[in-house]
Image (cartoon, rainbow, N blue to C red; front, side, top):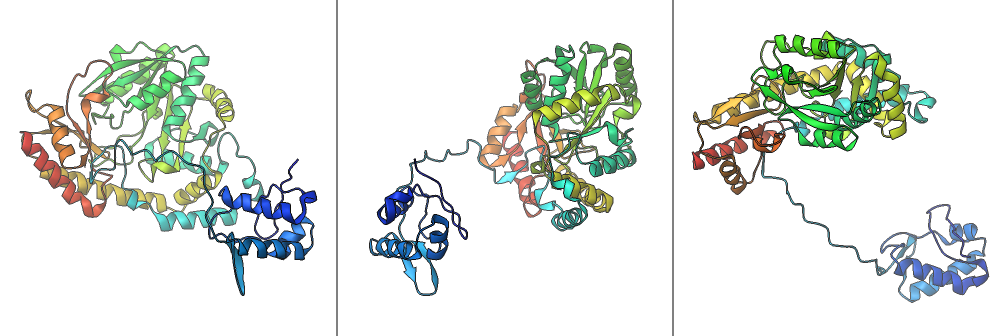
Length: 459
């Protein structure tokens, strides 16, 4: 049976049996090159290192290398490492698929922050501090609840910035809202909740995740004051009270009180997705719904809009009765953010750099919103402009249709989304969802001008 061997300088794999001698060693190296495991231009182990690892005389390896160099498989040079001289016949791979939705030239897609604003220097400094201060135990398997340092920091930060009532023991770290809703749906379904309500309209991705984990999904209408609480008849509901997605309305105070009272009286659970609560542009502060009923509301926050979606870093502030069931489900799922990212996030908040970053982004996004509003023709009705990274455009009357405006935008390589795809059941209203966070700073003016031209084309 062939054995695997490795070199002490450069690790290599050779299917070689000692009894096959020099001839077998040469054949094993040829096979490694032909099969693409040793790639053209790559350095190979020195004769001394390979001889030591294989337990053969160095002269044997030297003669094999010389023979393979003469055959054109290896390339030798005085004072330089020996390298592979020829490319092998790599296994054929299927052609790379062409993206169905290539990145647009003008990016006005909603739900995306300005990635160029990521605080690289502050994050690097926070990571260095976290590495310097982390005990050796920090590099062991991650605790199901998340890093204690982050949970303690989040408890103070969320209380200060969003009015959340929490202590570290009630905070569990997760990999974003998608992860949170999957975990919560499984836990609730196991506890007998066979249905979960979502605002109508809402983001279909999260509805699909919830349905895939047990409960059936139903829609509850949203009007100009937020979700219609009187229409609720489910054991759980997912809401976006600070800035409803996608319509952008804020759940008014009377409805907030009505929703939490309904949850307390019926024993239902409210899942609060506070996806962009940090970015409010008017002077009306809107705190977390969770503060009104901390034992009936699960608060979920993430870094997807404030820092970057790819961090996959989020947190749940749970009612006491759900902490252990959710912790157990998190442990079973095995998925959680990298500990170093958790520690860096804690450092970023503790140092004040996170607050500074939020304030800078808030100023930039408010400026972008104002520039977008100024560029829009009077024939459209912008909504949801008080906060967040997007607004909704609706067209009075029956023309133009959403599909006509989207077609005009596609002709100009503008990326945005239509409102009709967010409804549960038949679309109630048409419109455009315009994101003003994703475009690079230098490209935002061009994006707004292109959008203006597209709208004028069809109106």
